[in-house]
Image 1: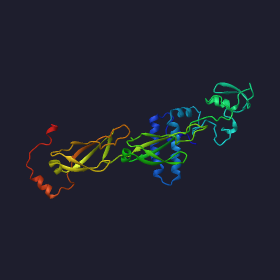
Image 2: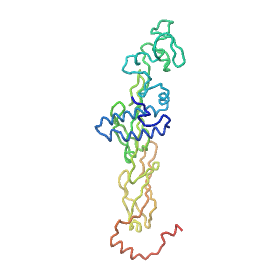
Image 3: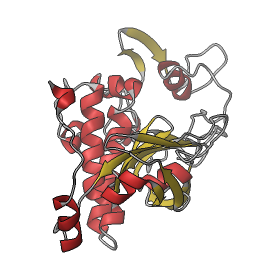
Length: 317
């Protein structure tokens, strides 16, 4: 496998924020949703996710930088296809048997478990890996690997929730529930759906990073939503009912007479919907008095006959 720093295109001195930024940019570019049926894109996405699984985890990154684990996340020399788990049967170097040095500590061992004899290979390995001595036939427990994935949802999906299919590092496709009210950049954890654990240990989780696409008219402010609403000159002067799009459908908004650009009206409970213990937000509508691109003759005649004298720039002096 490739060096995860090379895969994400960051130097070894990169900060956590720089690594996350690089991952998100590459994940968006190579996500299988954008390259349907492209096996190369799926492979590239899995490679990117695997690299971030190591560099995005502080502990794993430290182990990788120290040479304790490889780019696949396994201990150096570990080969899951080999019966003993290590290539050539010896993770400690040449000359297995007798006295060996490992990490500055001297061990005396052989392959047997004679009473009073030296420790067997499994015990030495367990001691080095922090597992302690185990009985024969008792596999070392290890929690399953956490899988990482990325998905981009619409503004409406983020507000109301939904379901998205994601592709995992192992090639599996799974439908993941997007919770209502999710924020841009939030990581959604799906428990127990990552890699299988060893020795009866728990499976890992899926860590799904959610990006929220921008909406052309709405912006999010906490659980509130803000938007500009164009109104005609007639509606501004005389007032009236005007339709306003919301996340749950259009509603009628009462515009008071003599409303001006910049006036803000509130629609209670029409922001981000209630989720968990968080109540629904509100929708704040900023009025924008808007003239037609090409005024018709009636509007020109009305403006020509305007007799009210006022200075619209009086407040800026």
